Image 1 (cartoon, rainbow, N blue to C red):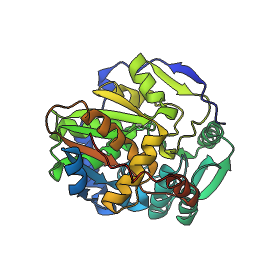
Image 2 (image 1 turned 180 degrees about the vertical axis):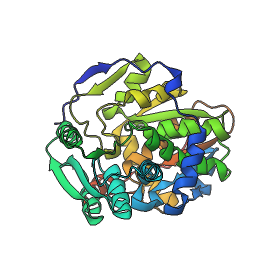
Image 3 (image 1 turned 60 degrees about the vertical axis):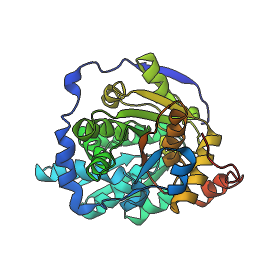
Length: 344
C-alpha cells in the first residue's frame, strides 16, 4: 500500500478548447455564496517581518466542512438542481475532505449519499462524513475505493468526482476569486495539488482579476505525480497511495481535464516531509488557527520561491483546509520546529 512505484498512465489533453471560460468561476461564486463562508484573508506581521515579503493567506481552513472542497461539491450539485437533474442517489470516493464536503451537501439537498474511502484516511474526516449522514464504506486501498465507486456509477448512482468535473473546478476557483475580489493583489499565487481541481480553478480565477500574477503548483515530494507530469509533458501516476503526512495530496494521478490547466502554470514545487511539518507548526503558531499539513505545502513552496527573489513580493497562499485527527496531530508535534525561526 505504501509502494512508491509509478507508471505512465496517459498522454495530456492538448485542445485549448477544453478549458473552461473564466466567467464560469464568477457564475459559481454567485451560485454558492448563500451556502458557504466567505473566508477571510489573513496575514502575520511577524512572519512578514522575518521574510521581508507580504504573505496573504486565504483561510479555507475556516470553511464549512473544514476545507475548500465544499465549493466544488456545491457548485456541481446546485448546477444540476438548476437543470432539474438533481440525483436521488450519489457516490464519491475521497482522501477525506471531498468526502465530508459531499456528505454535507448531500444532507443539505436531501440526496442519499454513499462515500467510499480507504481505511487509513483521517478518522476526523471519517467521523465528519458519517456525522453529515452519509453511508461510509471503507476499503483497503485507494484504487479499490475508486473501483467500487465506478461500480455504483455503472448501476445508475451519480458519481461526484473530486476533481475531474468542470463544475467542481469552477467551484474550487471561487476561493481564489474571492481572495482577488477582497484585495489580495498578489505577484504570485501558490496552491497545493492533489487531483488538480483547486489549482485549475485558481488559474481560471487569476485570468479574471490577476492575469499578471504567476501561478505555482506544489505537492509533497512523496506524492509528486503532478510535478513529474508537469515536467515530462504527460500524465504520470502512482500505482499505490503515496503515504505523505499531507493526506489531501495522496491522489494517485491528476485527470486529463485538470492536466490541461496544470500545463498553464509557471512552475511546480516539491516539498519534503520535514518542511511540511515545519510550516504546519509555524502557520498554526503565527495564524493562531488549525492548519492541516496539506495546507502548509504551498507556504513551503512560496518560501522556496521567495529565496530566489531580489525585490519585495506579495504572495497569496491558498490554505486548503484544517481537518486534523489525533494521530496526525501527534506526528506534527513529535519534534519542535518552532525553535528555528523562518528566515530567508
